[in-house]
Length: 77
Figure 1: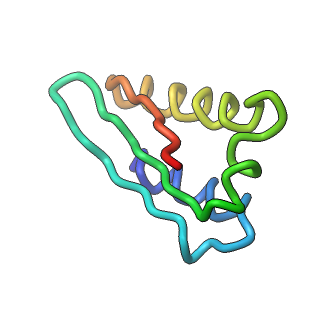
Figure 2: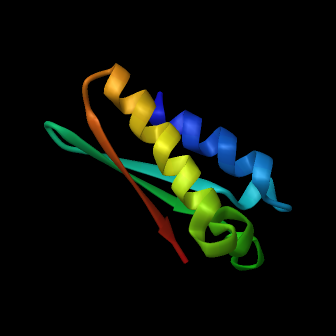
């Protein structure tokens, strides 16, 4: 569920949605969600002063709280 949420948000932001890749590494209490986008779309996903990335992390945190799990978003170049 969390992986699909991040993928949906990222595809809406970028110019090349076909290059969006999301992988999830699950642990007992924590999930690490790795987001990869095209190099030229990296700025769109991060946003000015990291505001877009921070907003995505906030939404992810709210969604993960609902399912009682901790999630971390990693944006990979």
